[in-house]
Length: 462
Image (cartoon, rainbow, N blue to C red):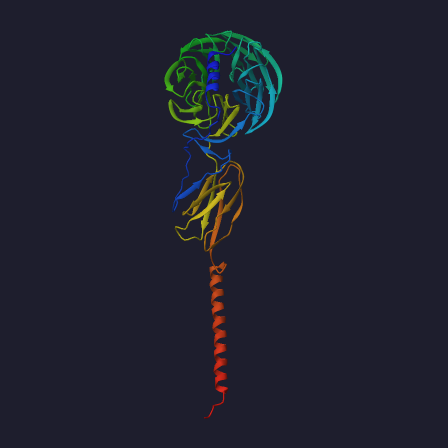
């Protein structure tokens, strides 16, 4: 049976929008001196074109989950580079490589939380349905074990210090501790444990208890502290840069920030915050809000922006291999993938035009015109076609072609040459001069012949 927050989320799904909005505002800008203004047309942009956000990155693409429904939890396997998305509605796991679904793995009923064990290379998936009550263990794209645990296992976390996997069992108010594929301990906690996270700084496990509005702190297999937080805590995440643990409080619309066993800050976020993800690349914390269909981006204890994603976002995970953040959109049956690294710049550099002359470049369907000597685009990795617009009175050295981006800046030189009579100016004027000389010479010849003919005419007498 699902928890109350899940039922609320389901209601939001019915009443809310199912559209995945990926239009956002960016803090990535183009820098450098220019001699004039640049105008950009975005008409006809494809979904793979980066779109900016208000402080958390650049949306690269929205990846559909073609088989699964109700994508819930997300985990990253740093061993094979895959991202695993548990689909609660279809009881399977979608395996994503970059932005492509490469496999679908059947698991138990209503899978929720996902965690990667870097010690054995396995991915653990909590199957939360009351008649399932198991954890599926995946090696690559194959289930290698099914581990019985407590009632309604909702979330999982890996403790890199002792090698154990911790499972929050919402229905039985305890935490199962797994070593490999065997349960080695069961730890009683407070009411309705729904989420679990690991603090590598102090070695503690943090368990969010939605029924008792607090967090149980576990050292090994013993509870050492209980920390009061907001109403119905749902998600737990750890920031390795500042050592804080972040807890999403579903009904308080806040995030509690814990230092050790003390709440040091409470941060207002979006509606019905559900999960917490950490970006080790830039140090940002991302909180999914199922009611407002976005992520709140937190630096330390300050909200620095939001990222619009799909309907009722749930799980959040960071892929340290490609720098992407993955968000499971429960209501949209999609995964939003966005980059927190500014894409490489593609710069077209012009020579030959007088200052103030407008010229243009179209790259991958996006047109820019400028009176500066450079035009710059931001593009993800890939190969893109371009064309250089015509400028009256000038020929261009490179009118079209392709550019390939592979993680580094790309520069293309474009030379304009003044033309006259369809030729470069020097040749055109030389041709004109030659024509004039020929015309003059022909005129002189005809004039001399006319004069000579006049001299040969005999005089006439009356």
